[in-house]
Length: 211
Image (cartoon, rainbow, N blue to C red; front, side):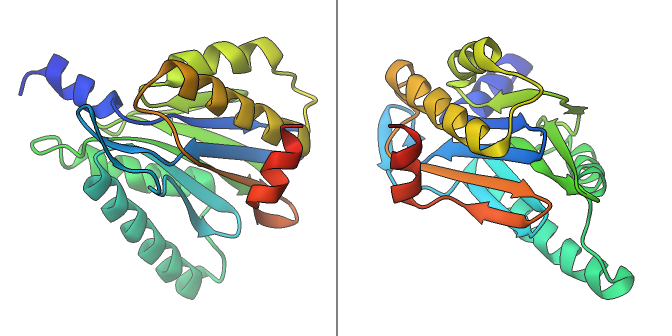
């Protein structure tokens, strides 16, 4: 597989969005899993809780991504036992980056977002398949629908935005991506992380946000 084919495979099949807010961070994703043009599932999970202060979104190869989620959860639990606290988003990102960089011969086909709070301060990281990462101060998106989602989020973003408002905009960005990207669709999962902890929005709450 050449480099062009590799990156084309990585970016297929989903849309995930993350926004940094004044009081926390919000991330969301659709729930469609595809195999080329075939819709394999409409109930795929693409946003995972790592701890009360940390979440990870996945795009790309499901098996690779789920393995990294499990590995990060185990590392977080070990860190809690040793240090008495959970991994910060920065530490978690560094750990995932090292794992990806050490496997360049047989790379994980993933794009990841790590989001959370570090002593109450929101942090957002975009991690590529080879372990490169960027700390995003405003917003980010991954997957095949990311260009459409980013265009919308960039048009509405404000640094004073709070998580409740950002949650609405993440949902709208996902809905817009669903209309333009056939690999994005079906349901959505939305979470916010603030000083108060981890919140996953219910279907009823998401419907209310979109009214």
